[in-house]
Length: 167
Image (cartoon, rainbow, N blue to C red; front, side, top):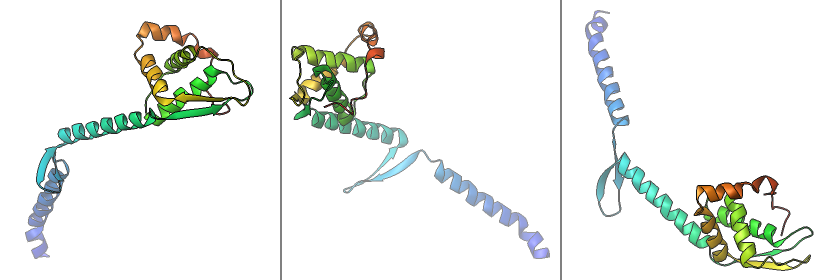
């Protein structure tokens, strides 16, 4: 019993040193990134910037892939060119990982419809929309000023954005 009492503080001090060392390692501001050809040390801030750049590059790649090719829709009863353009805008936004507001969707679908001279559709008619044209319409809608978006926002309550049953 005397031995335990004699070395009690030594054991407590040792545990405290180990615990403190563990906390310092966990809270360290540096991480080690091992590349294939050399070892470099980067801070969390640099890693965050690098991760953000990689995400931005991935988003640009997704947007480029989403703007190549065409989408073809077959008109069903009740479909209009505007509704199919809306479906194309929403598909582009999803594929490209781009956020668009409902007002921007309305603007982009209108741009597409006006560019196509608002054709009337017949049931079963195929409508092909070039993804690069859809991409251009979406970018134009995203470039609208806040006052222009407010003007488009007026139409949003009257639009059905569920296009799952169209085309």
